[in-house]
Image 1: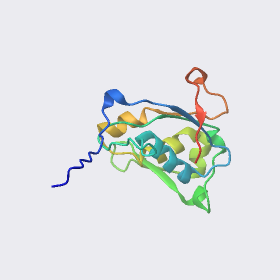
Image 2: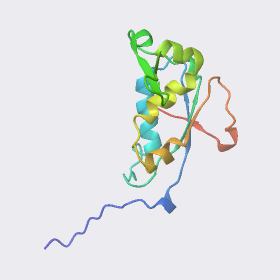
Image 3: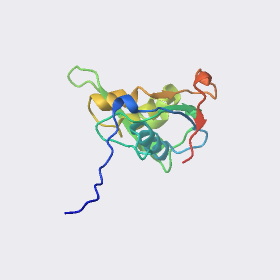
Image 4: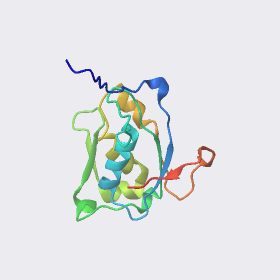
Length: 147
């Protein structure tokens, strides 16, 4: 029998220490940035990551209207939703979404990368997206996230 005992430390929700990160979306690619944001919200960038606990940090995204898509996604990518009525499927291209709701583009991309359960909804609440360069979270002393 081996006398050495190695145990994996599982993080408890009471012991989670949350940081605040700010990400500048100026010229950033939507999908690649969304993956990094989802990893930070889940806590996968930390060594104490535990899949069933919300160990993630808070993320502030500024300059959301200056983010971009690669290739011809701006014209070809479609966002659709259903109104609840027969034949009520509505679609918008990425270009239309960026003109009307640039924040929704980033939120939809990140939300699709999070778990589809109560834990994922709790993680999504730690995402704050703003169109301009100003945000009301200076008191939390957010630090820029290094990709």
